Length: 189
Figure: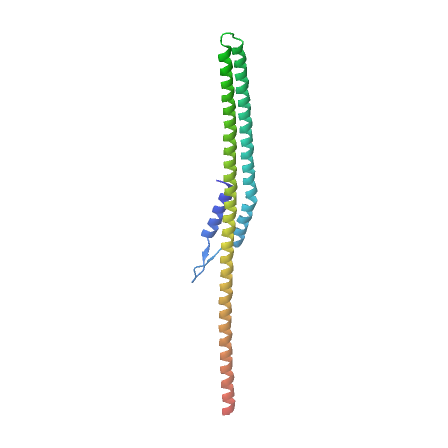
């Protein structure tokens, strides 16, 4: 499990620990924790790219080793061919076998190189895709959380505004009632 996977699990934990807002389907989350986790994901993404580069370096080592093995096989085949040529009775058979061994060695060496290159390309592609997907997922989750927080703040401010408006209307109504009753009392006196 990569560091980014762990951080994404932490982000899910923060979302799971979100507090339900009464009388709504909204939740309150710790925005600072989410921002910290997203920043950690951004910081870990280069580490995963380094790991992908290490895989490519490993691929190069495999290719180099395959080339060495191919060279060793070819050298051994050439040596065997020389030994066979020195034998008068089987000179032609030795030459044919040497050529066959060299061809097989070259074919095997080429196949090792192709296989190593394909494997390294596939590993690098998978690592890059995973890193991009993790970053995209983190960004999408961050946007969703930020939208939820903004919506909650807007709803809360609207609710406070409505409450203040109603309270102010009540105060004005009571004040008008008091002034009307004073005016009636003065008029009656």
